Image (cartoon, rainbow, N blue to C red; front, side, top):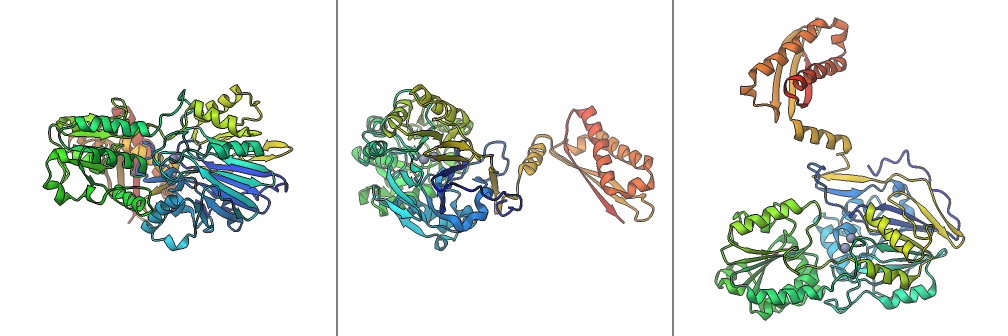
Length: 567
Ligand SMILES: [Zn+2]
Ligand SMILES: [Zn+2]
């Protein structure tokens, strides 16, 4: 994967007054956010995120960006800037930091805290140098000057970036919403955005996730109000499932629990560790006597208990899924209990989530989720919010980021409708370098980008070919043909034997499998000694023969694997 650089082209020369932007991921998908900003004298990386596998990526655990385009430029990478601690922004760092030459990582304290926890799990915390930043305090990184500014989002301590370059000022919003009443009273810093706008901004890169939503995104505080309205009406136990990174949501759930005199049990590994990190760094305020353990829970009546857990996306191994299946040792759902899924149904997860919801109802619970209650709001800006940012920043050039292709198109169209000319609000996608200067802009030929699959301990060893085989196996099953041939004469010494998996029940399909064996034997008889000497040719012929048979008799196309031995 990333070390395979023989074919990569040398970097194109860059004018001293120009800046080059190269998205390596996140422009054309939700996830894999990673972008390179280059000027003469160095490169900066913005975010380094992962993506969770899509349904067709069978057996894949995680997906990370392909960094071939910059992997031979290690010495030039001056730093990694992280906007916030979501997986789609920090999750690829343990897999890529070495290939990037271990440059220092700049971010806010909580983001670095979450990253440290992640690196510790990979036993590589010592390899990374952390530089904790303060918002509104510019830092010099080589020839760049970088200022982080507050961006309200569904995780605390989120930031946007203002990067000063010889070509001009670049503003990156990070993931953001314009929440006027955020839970920590730290709204997106519109004052700084307006000041950048007055100073003059060459390029704005802005979050496109929610461009399809008209109006504005609701405040996170409305979720707190919904909880405070809902909780007093619950009579049994309450279970709340949300993302463990959404510290504000967790804070609001805990506040609401305190108001109705319920104690809180925290369940799930990431929920426990994120709450600990956030409390330690002062981002989460929990009265000491409110948290209980399993033993204390057993002594309380159901109406005094609230359980905070993960699994809101229907993840099969999560505590919530196991509770729903009545397969959890300590926590059972009883009639009268209430379960609240306080998060979005992420596209692709709907079936898994509704499966969990159905099982919760089967156990007698009342379930509240996205479509039935106001117990979730988005962390991303809607159309009106996006327009406000464009109007404040007034950039010379605008490039939509963080979105699937249609989101980027619609965000560019939004800017066009506000007066940005077609060549000022520019759509680029992963791998397209964009060069900007005071004199204009142009794109360069695409460079290699893509997705690297992680399966167990293997990074990049499973590619599209292997995924195709996995799909083939999953859809049609496997047929193995064993054949032993005489070393000299080429005659069959043993076999053909046929073993199948996921294809047909072998004991009920004797006739078909016997026919298959007979056909392979006939095929061998019909071939000359020379043809049989070429084993690759022989394998092809075996496959062809059986493919024809299975296709004709069964209309199925199993993966056929001939194994030929010489005796
Ligand atoms: Zn985010
Ligand atoms: Zn994101």
